[in-house]
Image 1 (cartoon, rainbow, N blue to C red):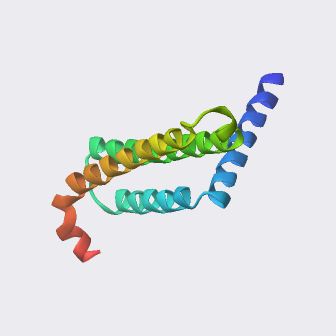
Image 2: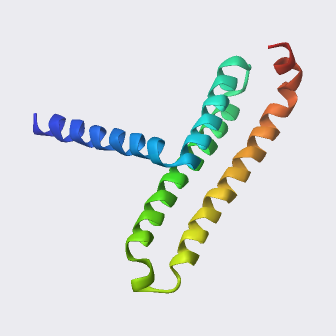
Length: 123
């Protein structure tokens, strides 16, 4: 029974983190919207299993990196000038990681969706 309670608490905490990110992080909301558009297209188009998997993986990676970026930014904001002058660099580097993954996800989506554009025009 303790395991179920611990698991329930873990899921509750994770859900609270998602709600916090949604409420306070505009970038997370934008990326979540993009992921939902991808999800709708996954349902509408006759994609191969590997194509669906790649799109889900890329979308999830962007969202996870954005959450990590938010954590790093909050931590750096707590300690920044008192600790080191590199605080701004740390925030910029984590933002760059999200940007690179987001660009990669867009490229993956373009490569996969390109042959299906005629089908999208009919939807």
